[in-house]
Image (cartoon, rainbow, N blue to C red):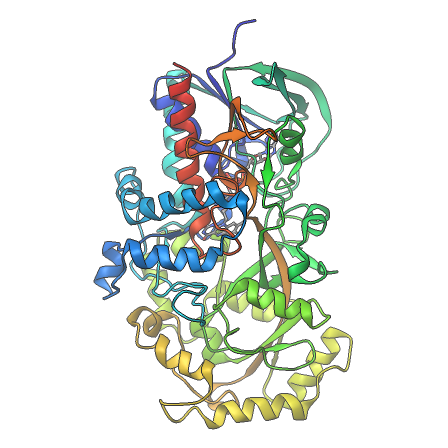
Length: 552
Ligand SMILES: Cc1cc2nc3c(=O)[nH]c(=O)nc-3n(C[C@H](O)[C@H](O)[C@H](O)COP(=O)(O)OP(=O)(O)OC[C@H]3O[C@@H](n4cnc5c(N)ncnc54)[C@H](O)[C@@H]3O)c2cc1C
């Protein structure tokens, strides 16, 4: 039977779009199949903050940051903690990816019109030793235009290929099976879902109105992870992070359902590191939700005081923005699945950012006039103020006693006592007048403010939390928010998928989150942040180029 295309790509998210455009540019015919409608093209990346891990960039150099491949690789390896036989390919991917981030990545994107906001962010700051977890320097480069700005160049290239007849989209086509002959992939089969005009990101109908098969020499699985499917998240939850949380919110749309992972596994693909995942602990329930259980992650600056459900301050170095999975592990060890920030109006104004393109209209809309207000404005950015006023997890009071009693009321318990909370805040406040201190979090503030980017838009001037001039006081109940899948299909550097017999499956490739962002788990146990979109770009590019080449 004749092939419908040279290559079929399952998934029109960022990884799928990158792979498809590389295939079309190589002069091959490609079909992109997606279960969602055209309005959702770009998948999760559209909703993302657009943060990219880059090493020794002009933006860093301009801010006086001295970065290098060696320093970044040291940070990556200390963060990943590769320790399994299965980490062979993930580790090779990590070396190649850090080289890409220190080399070609920025210029390649720039040539397609991608631009970067000039202040580089400092995510996952660690706090252990030089070989431990975290970024030693700021490396989180925010795309000018956030998520839509990273999708745009690839969508444009895809639409050009569409016009030339090199690329075809099949929206509302859900793949249910990989067609195999003698151990080689020869196409996909599945269901046609009824047309649905649901807005981007909203759940769409799963009513089946037909079926389809498509044949090609190669199939690239770029179907995303499992973060929208809480049953799968709980099923794969690693015991090292404690019991799976009873209550979680979703940082991803419902189409991140993990279904295609099971389908690909059933075809014989080798899924590794399924117990590695990346969920956030600073999740807040969205007062204006788009998808089910929609939660937003606070990207916190370093000053908020962080308390567990019983009112005990999180131990050093688990300060805001230091070690996401360290915090998750600690929180789950308390027997509760939530924690608290306590902060001031001065802190929220300067330090709260919300992850998501729709939560950052200034950067997403590429408005310099609005963006400049991050440094000069008297209040917090509009979307943060909206959460402060409408968000179910926010409490605002002038008096600490009233704040603590409202926190207990919100949690539906009496776990917090005023004396305990107040004593810890007062102890911290006594240290704030000297720039040489014992409190490790306050030391961190002074360190952060030595970096001009933090001083400008990310770290409030150190002050007493109980100083009424910086009030009102704010408490935020923080929930666990599902997001990324760090494990995935084991692949070589050409993104070719291995089978359970450890041999490459002819014609099968995987990219993006489905491939653990490359190799089956390029991050190891933890991430340095901004590494997911870049992982989609790098693995999608490798998969597309290799599949096009193999198509002859
Ligand atoms: C709010 C938010 C903020 C983020 N911020 C950042 C950031 O700043 N930096 C960063 O690096 N990362 C960030 N991320 C993560 C990053 O956006 C994602 O990890 C990445 O975009 C995943 O891309 P993907 O192409 O692998 O998968 P997806 O975007 O999930 O795309 C997969 C596609 O496959 C389709 N599909 C699935 N199964 C099937 C099937 N059986 N048949 C047909 N189609 C199917 C889905 O409908 C979907 O369109 C963020 C994510 C979110 C949600």
